[in-house]
Every structure is written in C-alpha cells, then in structure tokens.
Length: 80
Image (cartoon, rainbow, N blue to C red; front, side, top):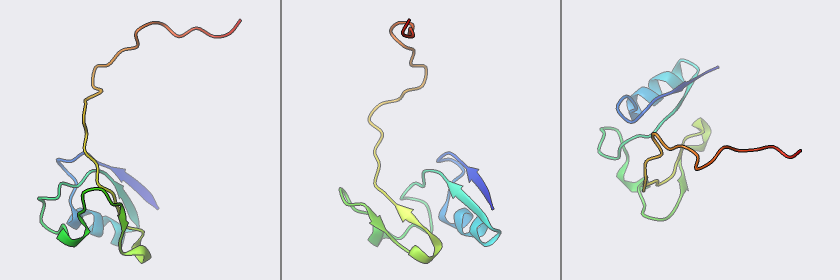
C-alpha cells in the first residue's frame, strides 16, 4: 500500500477512488464544489462516516487562520 498526500487543488473524489483501486490511499482536503461529492454527507457540525468498507471518512472542517510563516515568540529551552 502507498499513501498520497495532496492539497485542495489536486484532490478530488474521482482521484481518491482511482488511487484506492490501485491499492493507494489518499489524504487531502476535497472541496465540496468538486464533481463527485455527495451532498447528503455534507453537514454543518456533525462528523459522518460513509462507505466503511472502503474506509472513507468525511469530516467538516473550516480553516479559521493560516499558520504559514508563523514563528515562535521565543526560543525553546530545555530543562537543565
């Protein structure tokens, strides 16, 4: 088995299914506006698991802030 990790630009339901049939797993964010997305699994606050035989799980997620370029406020020190 192999694992492919993608960002939102490359990820789709069709790609996930194709990789699964080739014994590969896909991890990534799928936009709900992409073709192949089932509208009945989209909810506001509830996490649903669908298609358990293929280990497909969907969870609502909304990014509220970006961590790109974030730096620590001070240098971490160990105990001595």
